[in-house]
Image (cartoon, one colour):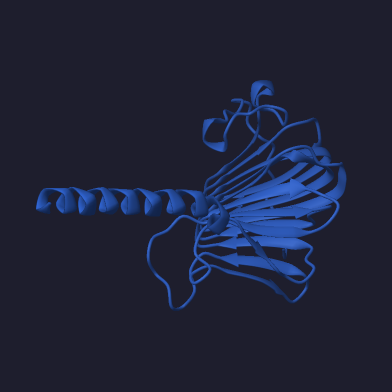
Length: 231
């Protein structure tokens, strides 16, 4: 009798443990994707690391795919700037942050102090888009075609763009701007960096990641005057 009760308790413990694991696995995808309510925005900024995915859609929508709402801050600031902060003043631990942002159009995108912002899927052609990377990070918006692109890298980082008519590019203290298409180019490089044309195999319709993208060895046109833009 004692043996039977002992075996029963063991079976019960195993069943209970298994059910708890299954409930966790099933609940995890639901908990990982959280809709974030924000005010209307025109631009997107990523600060201090993480990943932001841009998609085209008729209505604006922001979804936290990975991360911690106790750490991450996603708020619309003055001027319609949607700012994603990986860390707030009360959170300093390591974790993965991934945010998906859907909108009809993105006027400006920026990365500061590290992180990766990239577009996925097809987008309609825009009149203009402005982009900047400060103190490291990467922006890959090859799938967002625009007549005019303003791109700026300060203190290291990388930008990949597809301008159809005009590219205004500025690199200061290291960094890389890679473009596709045949736009007229106005570029400025100070204290190291490069503005280069990307290869056809890594163009807007390819699946090549930012890290794998190669550039042609043809040197970019540079100007001797320094320009700065406010994004």
